[in-house]
Length: 371
Ligand code: GLY
Image 1 (tube, rainbow, N blue to C red):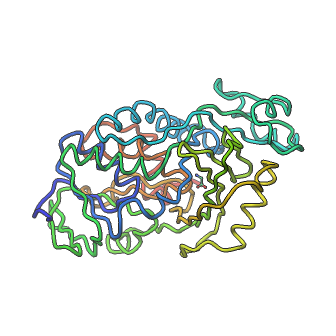
Image 2 (cartoon, rainbow, N blue to C red; image 1 turned 45 degrees about the vertical axis):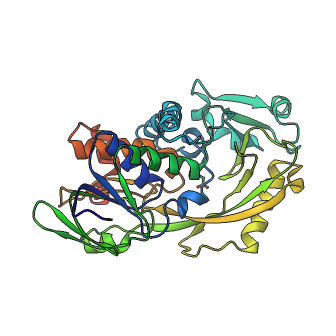
Image 3 (tube, rainbow, N blue to C red; image 1 turned 90 degrees about the vertical axis):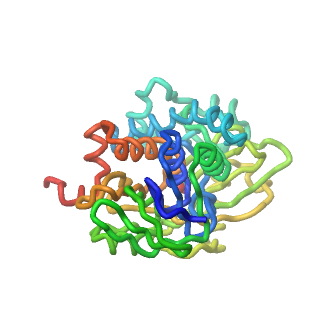
């Protein structure tokens, strides 16, 4: 049952909303999460779960990369804390990523990455020692041990159970239709009734444009659909994640592998096409010569929420100080969930947030770009 008032209402029960609820509930805030459908079943459950701070971020080494690395590092303690509080193992799998390189020109792209002390260049022979079934025409690989992976469903549910242990409430099948500013508080109109809150957080992924519009926000979030294959094999064909040009094969801690993912701009459907599956199979075979041996266990499609500059929106509404936004995490929702949850917690508690982060992720940054 909904109460009449909460300190904070979080809209959206994906990994970002659940992480925010976790960090706020730990501070003994009174939180309710409103999810339009079933918690953690949309983009979150279609994610591969790669914590790819190094492998995904290659064009902003001053702000975004350190933010992503901090979020990745947060998982090291978080996995224990979440297990203690929820009893859920988030499937943190070590091993890291081999970013495969097929030409000298491709290798040049990794010059910056290779300066990082945890990142190492492996020639073809060393790659084959680690992964004997790797495709034969590989030149080498950038080896990134820190880019581990987790199980997104388990991680989301570990956040939920731990937040519940600290008093947070979660409401499924509870779409939010409207947020009304009542001069100090907000009236949140939901399918299950109306509640008042001092703070409202939109962690709506790609599904929040109607609320953005109502709240007078000029920005919109659009999808880049990712289709993936869930596969298995009785033998362990692969120990490390293989990655090339945005595609990957991820060995998970549950015995399955994820072959992902397509990049379908502005595709709002949740279906997986034969064309998408064909693309993924070709990519997998290019990386791993034995990929044809995998058995297909299932397919997934998730809508990556994307902003105009592919950076998340994490910040306060430009005109309403009780409304916060946390969306647009694009390919990196699982990776960035802890750092986003901490940042929103700090905004709400009035703690200091690094100004370079506030500036980089503010909602109205488009108007502040100096050309
Ligand atoms: N994080 C990988 C992807 O979105 O495909």
